[in-house]
Length: 113
Length: 111
Image (tube, rainbow over the protein chains, first blue to last red):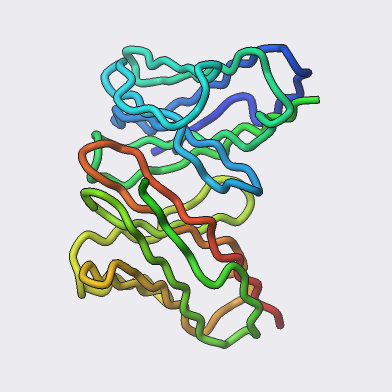
C-alpha cells in the first residue's frame, strides 16, 4: 500500500504571497490532520479533516485554512505569508477519527523569504 | 492546556549501549500515547499504548505506559548507529485525531 504523499516537497515563496499544499492519504484512510514543525516549537497541530469537514483546529491564525475532498485528499492554504511561516508542514492520515495510529507523509518544506 | 514533556532533550551514546527515553504528560481526556522516530522528514510510527502496564515490544525497542503516574518510557537495547534520530512522543485525547507532541529527544549513537 502506498504511504501518505505530499506535494510539493519544497517551496520557496516571498512574504505576502499565498501557498497551497496537497496531501493524499493512505488508501482507505478517511481522516487527515496537518501539523507544522519548526525547530523552536516542535510539531504543532494545525487542523483535522474527516468526511470533508474540519473537525478540529489548532491555535493558528485564520490565514491558515484547509479543505478535504470526497476522495479524502486534502489541501491546506496559507495566505499572506510571513517569515515565521517557514516550516516543515506534515500531513498525517488515519483510518478513522481518534483512537487510530496516524501515519505521516514526508512533508513540504516551505521557506518564506 | 495539554502538555507533553520529553527528557532528555538530547543524548549521545556508544553503539551497544541501552538507552531509556522519557515522556510525561498532563492532558485532558487521555486516549493514547504514541512514539515516533524521525530521521530525515516523515515521523515513522513505533508504538501506540493505551493500557497501563502492558509492554509493547518490537525487536530491540520496547515501551510501557504508566497511566497512574502519567508517563511512558521507550527503551532501546544494543543501540546501533541506525537508531540515531529524533524520538517523538505524542498523546491523543478525546475523540479527535489531534496529537499533542513533545519536543522530542535527539539520540546520537556513535561507533
